[in-house]
Amino acid sequence: METYGAEFLGTFWLVLGGCGSAVLAAAFPELGIGLLGVSLAFGLTVVTMAYAVGHISGGHFNPAVSVGLWAAGRFQAGQLLPYIAAQVLGGLAAGGVLYLIASGKAGFELSAGFASNGYGAHSPGGYSLAAAALSEVVMTAFFLLIIIGATSPRAPAGFAPLAIGLALTLIHLISIPVTNTSVNPARSTGVALYVGDWAVSQLWLFWVAPIAGALLGALAYRLIGRTDD
Image 1 (tube, rainbow, N blue to C red):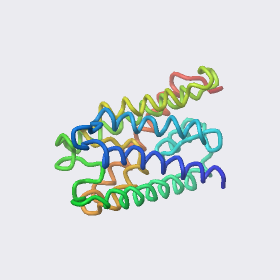
Image 2: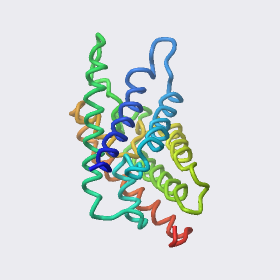
Image 3: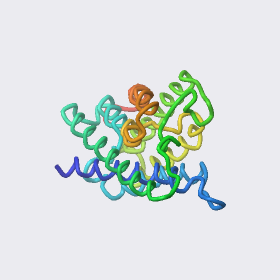
């Protein structure tokens, strides 16, 4: 149970910290943190929780990461569903806490997006479904490649959380305008279910594309890495 609790708490912190920065602080009058701040917030959630609980559960905090690590031979298939359940529940719990905080301000409306991921009319930059799908697949593929490589026994010890957190920061710097950046189905689900409507109808993409990308990333590492990783 400790591993599932760690995944719940890690995903909770990722969604609360990352999406919370977007909802509460990104456009705060005059001193808003903007896209750079939101990108850093997502990366910092991973760095902090990877160091805090990564030694308990492996620090996935993301269904796509769990699937990718399984495909890379780093994770047991029997643990996939419990891990994913813990991650999604952690995301939903964080979304609920964020909603309670955000709704305490006059004028708050879920229809503004609540940091949900989207494409077409709901893409921050108006990007198409095809562009959004490609972005999510490629970003998640490289995220998995970095995770698998950074956690290899041959990689410098102790630096994996930094590399992974910086990778997530870079991914957000690139792709927030395209989809609001998912690369994590639990992060997308954690806010989309509160928005409902378009956010739920488009949620399928932010499960399919990150998982497809994770599988590609695992395959890529298998082509360049060694089996003893």
